[in-house]
Length: 115
Image 1 (spheres, rainbow, N blue to C red):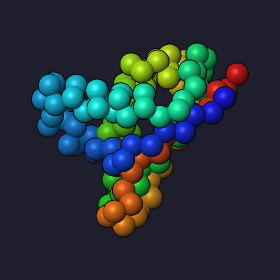
Image 2 (image 1 turned 180 degrees about the vertical axis):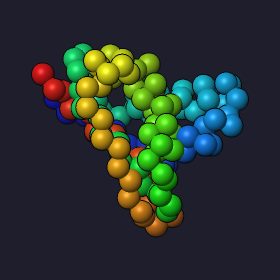
Image 3 (image 1 turned 120 degrees about the vertical axis):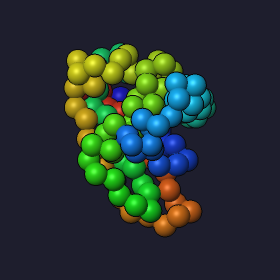
């Protein structure tokens, strides 16, 4: 099984996330939750490979890219699309980024069953 989901914006950087209050973080995660719930998706109950492609006008260093994905991954778990965010649940992770023009910014998340 394979699910491809799109956020209409690039994920935030870890540096920006760290400055959010708990309320702001929860609001962001919950917004991602509803964006994911509105898109066609499978329910992945076993270990998965998660590929996240952040498309933005600027590139982040790797730590900021990975850390900034946390609200999206938490939203995937809360939506029941993946069973958890531990290593046994997301056995493979691939974080990528691509430079695009301002009107084309987004984040694509691809989830593939491993078993």
